[in-house]
Length: 131
Image (cartoon, rainbow, N blue to C red; front, side, top):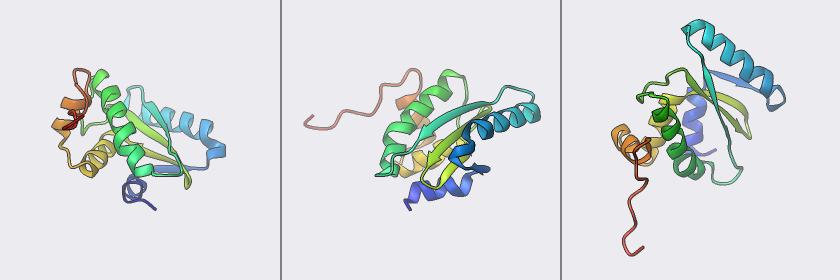
């Protein structure tokens, strides 16, 4: 198992089988909404079988940070957003803010830097030398 995926599995607050995905996501959204009094949102990610760490750190991190920033969520907060992550091990539910922390750390970036790069006003990753 990959290092980043293992860390996210450790952070999972709930698990379900892929066959139960729709029901599990709906129930989790409803439970979290009633607990917090605000609408909970599921951000869904389907992991590839090959190179899940690279996918998470290069594809998911920028899009998740952009999504959170556009909603006004200041990481490491989650703002009612949880990630429903489909993996070979099943469906994992992880708080969005802590997930961003794990992915940023895997890229050796601070939270401020990921927001600067990938937030609503971000310019993305710096250009590579010679590119």
